[in-house]
Image (tube, rainbow, N blue to C red; front, side, top):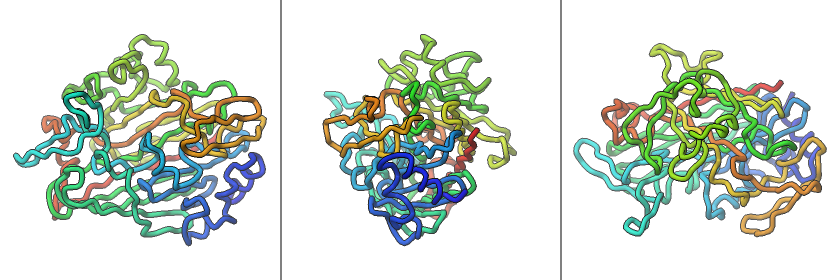
Length: 423
C-alpha cells in the first residue's frame, strides 16, 4: 500500500486532518518542505514528516486495525510553532550534545573539570538549576539543523556544535539520518568530536500515543502494553532523578518489572510503589532501564527488540531495536492538558469533525463530542534509546568509552529501528 493512499484516506476521513501534508502539497517530491514547513518521507504503509528545528519528527502516520490513518506522535501542525512553544517539551527532537541529566552540571575529562549550563531544578541558591538536562538551555533540540539530503524515503540533517557552547569542550559535527521502509522507521545518529575530547550521548525524544489520541474509552496510555525483555536492572536515582551510582534490580512483579512479561503501563499505577517512582512528589515513570544482552548479540536480529509498545484498541504495535545499552521511558506525568493535538489527531471511531488551536491560544477547542483537544497527564509515553545516564560522572560503570569521544578516534554512533505491525 503506497502512503499517498494513506494520506488521501486521512484527508477524506478527518476534516482538516493531514490534508496540508498530502503529497499534492509538495511534500513528496523531496524538493523541500510543504506549506507547513515539514519535510515528508514515504515507505510502504507509513509516512513521516520532519523539521529542521531539533531534527525533530513531527508526524508519523499509519493505518490502524480498522483501516483508519493514525498520526501516533505529538507535535504541531506548523514547523514555526515549535520555536514559539515556551514550554518546550523536547518534542520529537534530538537532545544533545548530551541527552538526559548531568549531575551538578559538571564533569571531568583527563583531570580537567568542566562546568556546563544548568537548566533544571532551580533553587534560590542556584537559580539556573542544580543539573543540566538534554544539553543545557540551548541544547541541540532548541536549534535549527541543516537539511543536507532529502529523498522520497530518507532525510539527513546536520549540525555543527562549536567549542564552548553550553560549556562543553570542543567542536562536534553531527549527522542525523531518518529512513522509512516497509512499516519501519529507522534512525542513525553520528557525531564526530573534531578538536577536543568531549561527552556525547544522543537520543530521539519522541512522544507516542499508538491510538493517535483518539481512543474513545481512555485519554491516557494506561491501555498501552510495554515490554523490556532485557531490562532486569535500572539506574538508581535521587529525588531529582540524578543517578546515585547504584544499579537496582527490578524484582519480578514490582512496579518497574517490564522484563518478566509484557504488562499494561496502567497496571503499575495500581501499585503504591509508583508514588515517588519518578522523583519527589512524582507518580509514574521517568526511569532508565539497562539493556543487558549477550556480548555477541546482534541487535538487528528478528525478535531481538529492546522494547515493545502496543495498543489493543488501535492494533498498532512498535518493536524497537537498538545498539544502545539503556532505555528511558517517561509516562508524561508533566503533561497538564495544555498541549494541543494536531488537526489529524483525536478523531475517534465516529470520525468527528475537529478543530485545532494555535500556540498560545488560551481556548481549548473540542470535537463535536466535547472531548478535550489536548494531551492530558499520562496521555503519551516517551521512549528513548541511549547509554547509561550521567555515565560521564560514573567511571566505575565503565561507560566512558561509549560516552567520551575525541579527534582521531571513532565517532559516536547510535542506531535504532522502529518496526510496526498492525493486527
